[in-house]
Length: 91
Image (cartoon, rainbow, N blue to C red; front, side, top):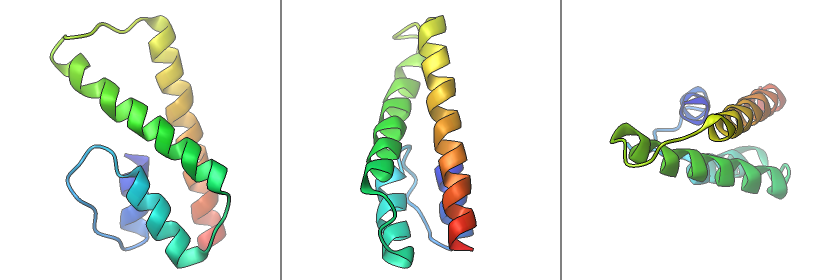
């Protein structure tokens, strides 16, 4: 949700897909220049993992434990904080 919100703030329409991280990376860098390619790569990796993990959990095809939940929380928190920093830089 942080990535979709950031795209909305930047005035960019996004497709109805779960993982918009590649679009965010591309559009942000087009608009503001290259910040840190490793940061965008990390955000894309996290977003991909989180989006791929959600679908099986909705249908109870996979159970997630405490370790998975902690990783998801920490990764999502990282993305949210980095998006906040990027938006502060850009506006």
